Structures are given as C-alpha cells and as structure tokens.
Length: 572
Image (cartoon, rainbow, N blue to C red; front, side):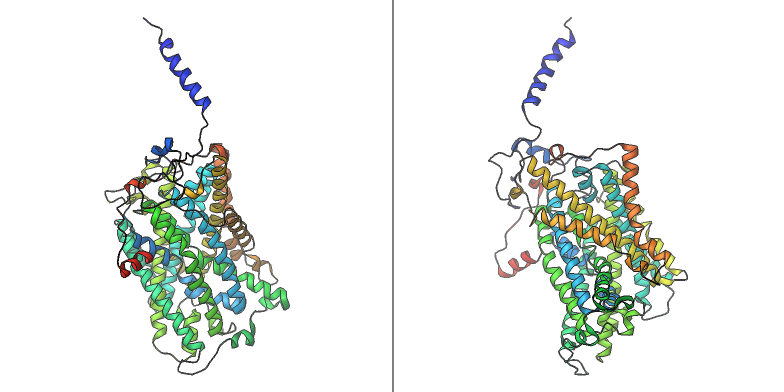
C-alpha cells in the first residue's frame, strides 16, 4: 500500500509554493473599470478579477445576514429625509436659542452640520461597498479591531434602543399641549404602534417612513414659509422684524451670567449638544443598506443629498428661528417639551396667527413617533450585526419568511418601556432631557468610531493597491473629512457636560447623564480585549472583499425618458 503522506505531500508543497509566490491581495488588473456604473451588473468595482467571485454573499462572512432586500429607492430617500427631522429640530432649537442666542445657534448648527457631512462621506463609501445587515459594527470589526466592533455595537445599539423611550416620552409631552390625558396611555399606544410596524415585513417600515417623512418635510417647508412671512411683516400684526432680534437683545447671550466674549463662547458651545441631537439619525440611512434593493445606486444618492438637507432644513431653519423669536422670550425656557416650547409656535402666537400651533404640534407628534419607530429598526439591525459577528447568540440573526429578524426586533423593543420612567416625579420633560444627553453622547462616539474606521479603510485600500475611483461611491475630501469628523465628534463629547462645572450649576444627575456614555463605550472594549484577546487589524491584512454585494442581483434599471420620469428618478 502506498504511503498516504507521499500522496498528500506533493499537493501541499505545490499549494505552499503558490501561496508564497503570490501576495495575499493583488493589485487590481486593468480589466477592472476605472469608473463604477451602478447599472452595469458585470462591474467588479475595484476588485481583483481573480477574486471577483468572492463578492458572492455567504451568511456570516463579511457581515452577511439573512435579511431581505425589500427597500426601494423611494423608501431609502424618505428614510434619509426623515432621519434628521425630529423633536430636536422642532423643539430642541428653542432651548438652544435661549442658551446661545441667534448667532450662537446658527454657528453651532453650521459646525455640527459640517461634522455630520464629514461623517456621512466616510460612512457612505463603506456602506455602499459593504452593504450588509447592521453595517456599522462590521466596519469596526473588519477595519480596526473586533473589540472596537463590539463596543460600537453596544454603544450605538444602546444609543438607539434607549432613544425609543426618549421619543415616546416626547410624544407624551406633545399630547399634553391639547389634553391632560395621562402620559401612560400615550406611551402605551406609541409603543404598540412601533412594535407592530417593526415586526412586519420591512416594506411596511419603509412605507411608514415615506408617510411620516412626507408629513415632516411638508410641515417644515410650511414653517419656513410662515417664518418668512412673519419676519417680512406679512403676519396679522404687520410687524416687519428682519434682523431686529440680532441687535436687541443681541446676537449672543451672556451664558450663566458670564459677560463678554467668554460668556458668548460658552453659550455658543452649549448649543452643540442640542445641535448634535438634532443631527444624529441622519446617518442611519446607511443601516438600511443591507435591505436595500440596489445599494450601489440608492445609498450614494441618499448620501449626496445630505449636503442639501443640512443647508435647507438646519442652516436656513436655525437662521429664521433666530430672526422670528428673541432669545430672552420666557416661553423658550418653560421646559414643557411640547409645541409651547417650539420657537416656531412661539413666533406664530406672537404674530397673532391662529390654528397653526395645533397643526405644528401634530407634526411634532408624528416626528416623535417616527423617530421611535426608526430607532427600534436600527437597534434590531445592530443586534443582528452582533449576532452575525459572534458577539451575541446566533438565534438573534434568525429571520422569518419575510426576512424580519423577529428575535432582534423584540430585544430592541424591550428598551421602549423605559419611557414609563417619565411617569415619575420629574415627568416626561425631565426624562426626555436625560435621555437626550445619554443618546447624544453615544451617537457622537459612534460618529467618531465610524470616521476612525474609514481612516483605517482608506489606509488599507492604499496599501493593497486598490482603486477607490472604481468603487460604487467615493467619499469626497478623504481622508481629511474623516479626520475632521472624528476629532470634532470627540471634542463635543468631552465637553458636552461643561455646564455642570460652572459655579452654582453642579448636579450629579446631569453629570452622569452627560458622561455615562463614555464608560459605556470604553468598558466593553476593555472587556473584549481581556477575554477575547483580539488583535488590531493591519492594513495589509484587512479583508476588503468579503461582504461586498453582487451587483448582478440588482433589479433591472430602466432609464426614464420623460421629463417627469427624469425628475422622479432624480428625486428618488
């Protein structure tokens, strides 16, 4: 009988010599397209053609899950539109105006908007190239360290699951504008609606976002027009305001009684948390990449439109808010949390316009419920990502016949009943304020982490000789934008609670709410490193192939020929 070793040894020697003579990742061949075409199913988008077959999606490899791609371009567009229009924009801008003044408010939103733009340019490129379930934790695991993936999943997942409670609490506050109905009823109705939408086919979630985002966008456009009418003297009182309030009481406040430039700067900086809370959520459109029918086409379109959304909804919106309401208006600081604290409603009432305040309050109520609905969806997909990466039991990644991760949805929803804490002595407004701080810090740390992921990804692409120009989407001004996003998010996080250190402002509860997010971010990283002994991923060893999407499975794209069709194609 022949020696088995004599039969196996030549094959092993052949494989060994082949692997030794070839680099792990070869430079892309000339056949790889220099410019990616999302309508070309044969495009290998910057891969080595010899490894193009590795883009085939296999469960558990590169973050691939079993969710189904049922979200259309229309769904993704409205998820992007609605993601950043919530109670923070309608109500939170009021308290920010009272603390910072009109110029401080505007500057804070411009700066945080710039940071968000940098974050989106980083996320967009990675999410389009690796459009898998949950996306964000996979990036950290693949590009930096599995420990960072674990801590990002914990921090970001906690941010959004706990924010379900904040938004449902906000809904209870909003309803108090009309009635003294017990908040428990409002909270219960809101939670039931959120659970039903998320446990159904993901297309129901997409359609719910289309409806709610449409209402929010129409409402906000209406508020912009009303604000212009008010400031130009077209309201019933015919008072032409212009920039009067920028002169009296002034463009900046004397924050906490601190006069001069230092007080103005403190007021301006204090608005950063309010601005961050308003913006956090815009990036969540990338979470839907794993369930988007054609992520190579739809995700880049959503990311590119972030620039215009920031400019129109936030910059123009905050500019007009500072023109129609003086920062010393006592109604801005009432802390009711409903439309009574909205700067838009205050201006409408002051100008003598009737009925509109109730309409605005209804839009705010829709915003609060829509945000809670989105947060449950996001939290469940983060749980799915953790399960796929082996950080949670695999049963959380199981889906029903409609592609819905039932167990993950239930786990995410379990944080929603925290909203009942608002029934305590502090009331819904106080609960909303605390959860605002908690979720904002977690969101900022996630922004920072995702930018760090892109910096490492960018380095790996260069080391492995890949052509970013052939990717489905190439982020602009990179890697410099990622550095700005990471550093900016870190600075806001570290100084988010500076107010509690000022004379007479110390509050243990406020200090904990402002900074508890930092240990929640650090502790999981340390524990994973201690118990799992994970290693930092070197640029040369980073797997830039697993988890890519096979573009040949995309639905057929038919280019529109009519003017209306081209407009809809541009819009969606």
